[in-house]
Amino acid sequence: MSFFLSKTLIHDGVDMTKDLAYKRVLLKLSGEALMGDADYGIEPAMIARIAGEIKALNGLGVEIALVIGGGNIFRGAGLAEAGMDRVAADQMGMLATVINSLSMQDALEQQGIFTRVMSALPINSVCEDYIRRRAVRHLEKGRVTIFAAGTGNPYFTTDSAAALRASEINADLMIKATKVDGVYDSDPKQNPDAVMYKTLTYDEAIVKKLNVMDATAMVLCRDNNIPMRVFNLYQEGDLAKVVAGEDVGTYVERG
Image 1: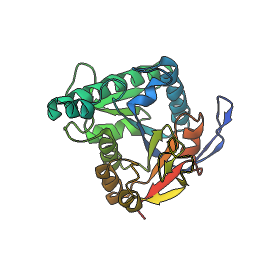
Image 2: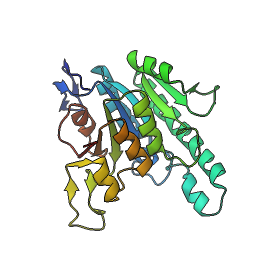
Image 3: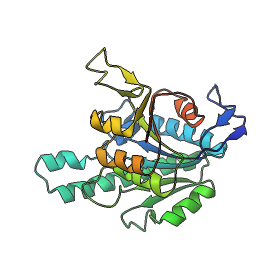
Image 4: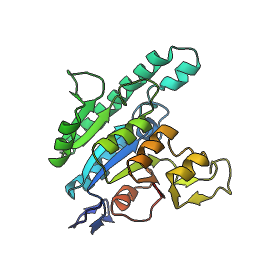
């Protein structure tokens, strides 16, 4: 389903006077997105810029949920491959996503945005437990809601967590932020002749093994009819264009 809002806002020189095509969105950020130009951890300037773009959309009445990975701090799958117990490694990775979620909460609150972090793992002293009905209520009240700790289970990626939460809150669109312009038929960094898809179905992405997300996440989105837009987070202003329904990046749908 789609909703349309008409308001005027100028953000960082970008005219956001447009009809926004989506009322409720889930933005999936990789942990690496928070690094900016750094090699590790969180770059304050980068997280502040992302928070600013989210603030602009929140000011237009868009209900925004986030899922953030933890790869800038800890990648559970990597340690599992090196010999660590997979369950322990994945649990450590989930805790890394909580750290990133709290940092994003701080960046948003510094810009005056009411924000809630909801964790799939009980960590009551620092954030709320994830309860679906409460999460929807936060969104309805205009609070940016960040879903931390993945699904709370090992063996599932944060992409799968994002697809699950998008389905649970009945998001109009899942937005996957990457370092490239969209989905390509091969790695554009290694193949200068790589071709970008403007539209795809989830089945095509799965069959062609395009690595949009892991297969579990794509099946969840397909079966629950959650469309997805893949775009380049480093193109400032493109997030607003995506929410406005502009043809940015790659659009993936059930088909």
